[in-house]
Amino acid sequence: MYIFEQNIYPIKLIFPYLSVLLAALTVAFFLFHRNRLSKFNLVGFYLIYSILTDILISPASLLFFNNEFWGARLFTIIEFILISKFIYDNTQFKSKKLIFIIFSILFAGFFLIEMSLMNQSNFDSLTTGFSSLVLIIFSMIFLYGKITQSHQEFEIDGVFLLISSLIIYFSGTFFIYIYSSNYLNKPEFKELYNFINSIILITRNLIIITAFLRYSKYELKTSFIKDKYQYQ
Image (cartoon, rainbow, N blue to C red; front, side, top):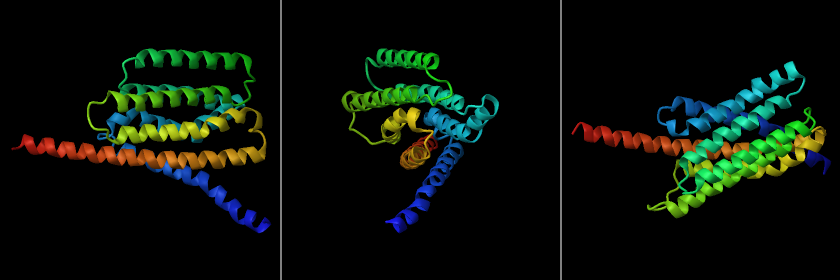
């Protein structure tokens, strides 16, 4: 049993590096094909900001405020705004405006309450968990609208794949965010947190890059057809 644990431990350490590498490749693909992926600009900016948070903003927060969680709080807000707007723009649902406004107000209220009542030196796990829950709800509204409101045959397109990846990501991280407030300072939990989060990020980014590839191919084909008819 001890030998097995010794063998599996280095493997667990690989996943965070794999998640960072895949995230960088996903961002590089987005930037290289940005003209064809303009529909996904909000998601692309979100991915870029995620990397900047890890390598620049969180360390700067720790350096200047002696607390890396200020960077995490800022990321939670930016994430909520960018992902909510992307889902909203692609949702076909009559009452979407009212639903998105109500839940956005609830998120803002939840964030302000936690900021005023909780220890500022701790990770804002409740707000992050609530944000994940709301974004899952928004994503499910998108899926419901796509299934019920579309007059065409149901298609698994790039947007569908991307929002499905968000559902997987926010569902997978919801509970570990909730528990993080009390246990993140414990080495065992932090190791488990990084391991689970890395696997979920790898899964999400694999689906996102598949969505980018699918939509990029579709845009290339559409552009070719337009050019063909233009010169006929």
